[in-house]
Every structure is written in C-alpha cells, then in structure tokens.
Amino acid sequence: PRKELCSLEALLEEALDVHPMSSAQGQDARALTSQQALRAVLRSKGFCWIDSEPLKKNVWSHAGKTLSVKPESWWWSVLNDEQLKFKTTYPGEDAEYQTVRREKWHQAVGDRRQELVFIGGPQMVEAELVALLDSCLLTDDEYAEFCSTTQTLRVPDDDFQVTSLLRSLGASNEELKANTEEEKRKKRQDREE
Image 1 (cartoon, rainbow, N blue to C red):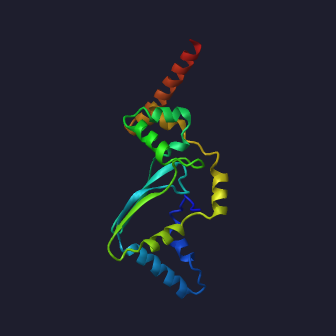
Image 2 (image 1 turned 90 degrees about the vertical axis):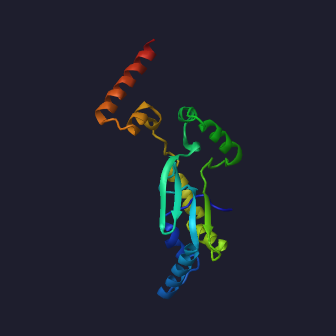
Image 3 (image 1 turned 120 degrees about the vertical axis):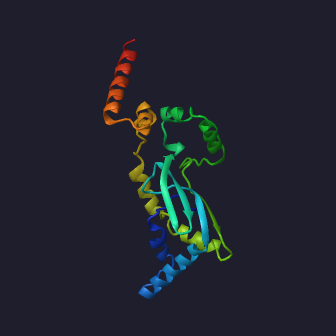
C-alpha cells in the first residue's frame, strides 16, 4: 500500500537511498538520476501533506527552478465540530467540504493526502518521478511513530474566532487583547442569562 505522507526535506536526500550504493560515485549517480527526473519537469502544482506541518494543507507551486511549498489552510479532518461549523459558513466552503467528504475522504486520515500534477517535456519519465516522490514517503515504522507523536495535536481555537479575522486585517496586539477581553465578558454575560 502507498503511504500518504511525504517529508519535503527528504525529496532529494532520501532519493539517494532508493538504490543503495556505498561509494561516493554511487551517491553522485543517484543524485544525477534525481536531477534528471526533475530536469524535464516544466511546472508542477497541487497540494500535499507533509510531516513537518501535519495539520495544514501545503500548496506546492513549481515553475522552472522555483519551487515553493507553503501551508495554506487546515485540513478538514483536523477541525473540531465548532471549527468546522465556522469554516463552512464562508461562501463556497460547505460545497467544497461536501465534495471532499464524498469523493476524497479516507477513513483513517480524512482528507489529508497528496495531489500533485507534473507538466513536462518529452524527456519527462513518469516512472522516475514516481520513484523519486515515493522515496520521500515515510516508512511504515516512521508513519506509526508520526501518528503516535501527532495524535494529540489540535487546531488552535483562536484561528476560528473574531480575533483571527482582526489579526488578518492588521489589528494591533492591544486591539486584539481588548477584543479578547470583550469576548470573555460577553461569554460570562451569556452564561449568567
């Protein structure tokens, strides 16, 4: 079975271990093979689940010699009920969530996965790219350890409250603190009523 989690840092380094060779010349040959696999790629894009950012979907964007992988949003499957309710109130988000649940959901990992597209010239060899990317995936033992160490991670609630919106609009720390105090006062008042 294919593993669904890749370590970006390992893209080229672990690719060198696909066909173990003990000599420096062997390592150079593996590095050359990895470079050849990538050289024919003109553009690649998509999103991925990486071990260094396990709760966020990372957007992969590559053109020419420029590659960026940046965290974009929380995976649907890591949100608690209140966070999910908050996120799906945004226009279009509920439809996206329902589509993902229907078409992409995996019982064990939810919506966390890799979806990458590679566009290249006639020298691009799919099998070489697949081998290179597969070499980045965690082994079964690494994946078990990853699951064990990340099982208690949770999305912070403050990303799904007014404070998060104010922060994204450039509010100062003083303004955020005042808003947090006002939210607490309103919650106390609601409980008392």
